[in-house]
Image (cartoon, rainbow, N blue to C red; front, side, top):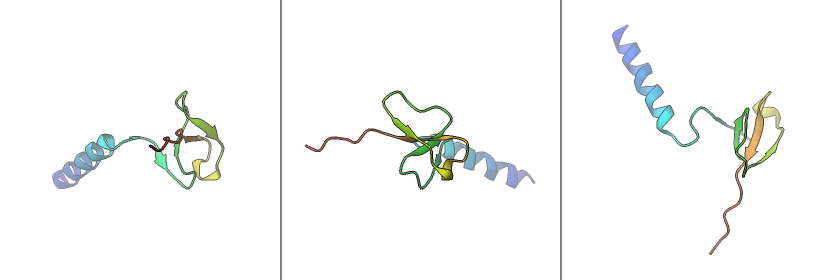
Length: 62
């Protein structure tokens, strides 16, 4: 049981350290969230269910 708790804690720490933590990556080519950043475009996608599909702005090439 103790090993299971440690494993869950490590998994939780890794998920929070990853970019966009707490946001589901999906088919929407961005991330799913209940609130998008101001700079992001938003749309509705069925993979996000009741959340918005937030699309970050495209980076301009050099």
